[in-house]
Image (cartoon, rainbow, N blue to C red; front, side):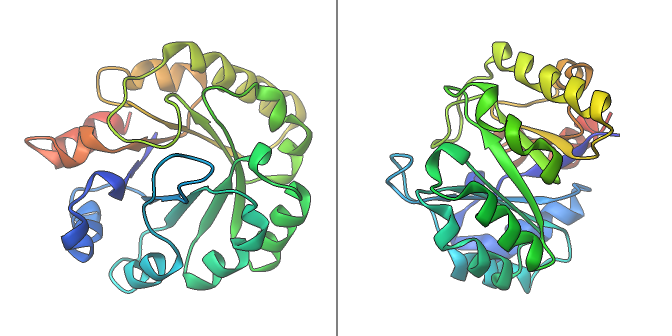
Length: 214
């Protein structure tokens, strides 16, 4: 069954404790935390203090997606703040393997992100070392964008290599995912989906989550 990780980027920032508690009430599987630095992406969200604060209010896995430059400077701090999974963009890093190793040394799951404008090859050298491969189906940096179906080819490539090599990483899709395209995501090989507005803005968030857990 597909795991659903609602993105708190779409929640009310003034009620974040309520937001993460609602994610569990709605029956979702993970909490997705989008960290943006205003440099790698042209937007700013939050950092380690927010992750640490959210940790107190949920026992669901905190799936922390770093859209920041030189993530190797901060991955350890996000692990210490309570992240269960930490992913970052390899082209934004000066030491991809070092960052992955630091996350693993903290006992946290690690992963890499392939942005919509990046080739699959940015992550390929590290696929045997990660727990999560995140494929963006929008351009990283903003919520509410439309799903880019052509990015599913990267998902299929990740699934093929996973099967061929006996790797065990989850394949996560982030960007414009909703009940209307969830079947295509699963068919391509996704095991986890990030959902923002399709959950937080839904008339019935519980039903929206259930509709994607196929």
